[in-house]
Image (cartoon, rainbow, N blue to C red):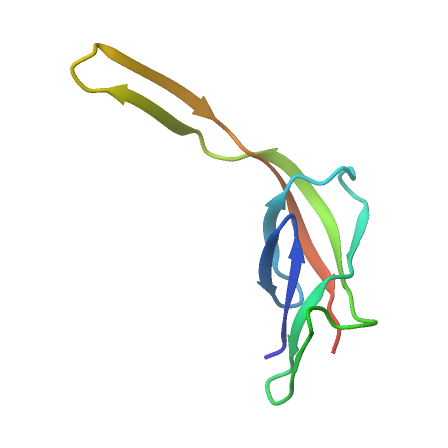
Length: 104
């Protein structure tokens, strides 16, 4: 089973061919193809290549499937014995990708 670890949005993701995943929001629109040049590691089951910090000439290609917003997170601030509390919500934007090609 081959897989790749690549970096985008300050995070690293482990993917195989055909996987779908949610990453930090990207400026491209739905239906476009995106190329991620920052490949950290590739593995084909037997051979493993590790970059220092990235592998030269390797990239991951994905198609944007959807855009959306994540689950609501409640942020609560409270001071005990002061009758102070503040509740704030946050929903993070994301882009959903389908991996179309990985380096072998």
